[in-house]
Length: 103
Image 1 (cartoon, rainbow, N blue to C red):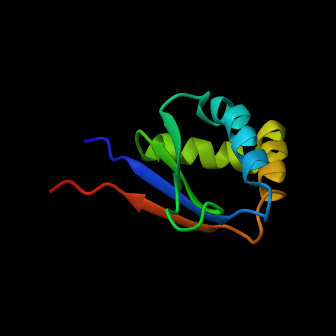
Image 2: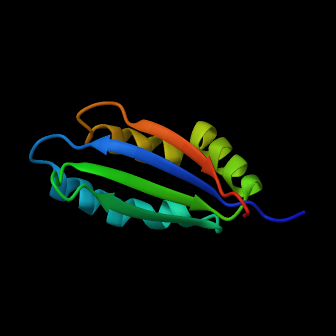
């Protein structure tokens, strides 16, 4: 069975004046987010508004995505990081999950 990549898009608006704090937080958090392996995190920034970003989380396959959702729901370290992350957002993120389609 072929591996199907999953892309998680977290569309966020940062709190005014907190952009640099958000960037510093991500530099600390990304190694933790990626630590199980098969997870890659990057950031897209709106070219017209540097307080609008998309945090892109790519998973090697659906099994890796499922394991990470379990970690997000139950791991105390992840819960603490996500609490800090949410505190830097002006509003709840829009969460979108995409599956790569073979053409």
